[in-house]
Length: 294
Image (cartoon, rainbow, N blue to C red; front, top):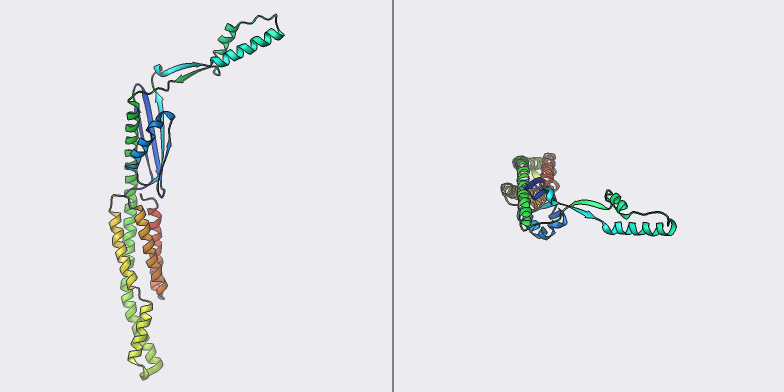
């Protein structure tokens, strides 16, 4: 069992590149992959998505990929000559028109402009070689392995909690089953006693049994208890499976809750209704936990 919550990080570094990959995930009904990466990685987007889909089945996945080129040889100077030419031309034009006696030195002005970051930039070369794509995919793969391990670790904790809740539920169902057997016997005896007190010797035994059977049938919850036993067995099986079971668990808990509600609506016994409340409380705790199960 895996959780849909996890985190994975991997960094690759050599003399040419530093590749940083961070992946985090939270619960989501379906698989939703969100990529944040520079344009140099766009050609590999489909391969990255496919790599993630092979391991991560459900959840909102947010992946951040950053690329840095290492080494001084990867820097380049970018001079915005178009801006410099435009500025020098306008200055020359204005000085000629309004200050013809002024001596204008374009070289001196250009030297001053070269110290201005608006006209000169030192940037990283945006170049990649044939190994770049393989390095990116390999780094992403390792980050995916790390988040998968994180999700598995979190899923094991959820499994432990669900196992405890499941056993608590089983104990209550057994308690309810035992009580129903005693309750039906006592109910019959009380019913017969009251009729005898009211009618004395005029009681028709056949009519008595018929009326009793009708009353007991209206409140009969044996079928619901049988189905709950089947559902619990299925729940135990799902908790032991390695593949994604979140959707199936969600559906199963809905069915179990429906059976418990039916038991509560059929029964008038305070003891049974108290057990029903406890059963519904446990199912709600289970439902909250499985919202984060892959």
